[in-house]
Image (cartoon, rainbow, N blue to C red):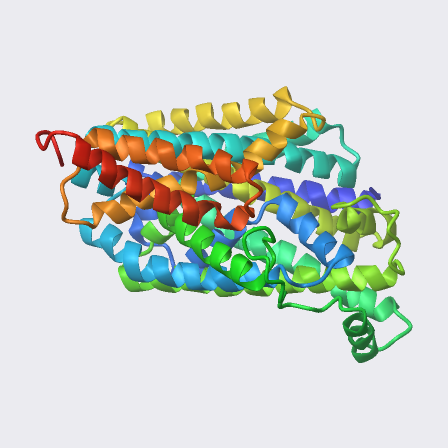
Length: 467
């Protein structure tokens, strides 16, 4: 990095830290710390949702998808919008009607405290595995882009994020998420502008050239729906259910909506986030396609490192620093959200809400330390762990979603039948993976198996002790 780039990075990191410490004085209770006093502007909550689900892997790999392929990834994003409409219509009204602080309280009120704790534990395991390993993979990318040794990258990102998250709570997290989202989106737009100004062809000719090569194709008409995750119906249906589950029953995502002042604001934030994700994906896919033209389709560039290579090798000083700040933003927004959500679920679901503000901060510190330790404990050669961490959500979302859907049924259930359904649904994903079923179907198959198992086991158990 040039001195100008390094200066931009240092100013960025210091600004994040100072803002978090300053914001911390507004927290008076755990309600402030975890839900922002339920007074978050819906636009800020919306941008925070988008930033939270955008990791560095998304930031750097989506341009790579367009570089080596086309724009069929947008089929998934189309499903994301429908999934969030379903969340807004089905689940958010339940959460606001019951006035819960943690969404797993809905399970507790319907099926008892043990099932609430089990749901929370499944969430905690999902987040700690997925985000701990995502943080590891993030550090690998940051190492490649900045040249920092990976342990240094982990500690710099982790410590700065820990300071502002620990001090400021959810209000700091969502406001900084919003700023960070705008920063890395601007990075994508600036990249597009830089390439268009550098190409010999005008923008229209460049797009026409890409279209002729099939690089702008969005709809995949393949009919192998069960084996090809990018066949249209497979991708669209998979995106719908993935978004319905991730933004409906994953507390890290729903927490932002719960911080809004009312249901209408929460619904605007949720549905708007789907639209902004679609826009974001479009920007970075276009960037990847234009990088393909700029590098004349060079396939010697390392896979999933196309954007990182372009940033390091071709961007001028200053612009490179802004893009590097965007990379760090994507990393920090996901990590800060995970820390706060893990602590909030621990306090509300496992401790029954019996924790002071300082104790909540201590719990946040412990979860942050665990996430940092995971990233420091493994290296990029631990491919099996990386794959497990990135896929773990597909194993658990179907089970959690089924519990929420069953909670809306008036039928009584034995707790053992619910637990059996949850475990069977999650276990079935291993069989689906072994059978070669596309990952876009994991949640839907798991959902059906989970609910069916719960009903069958419930019929076999005595009626007493049902809830």
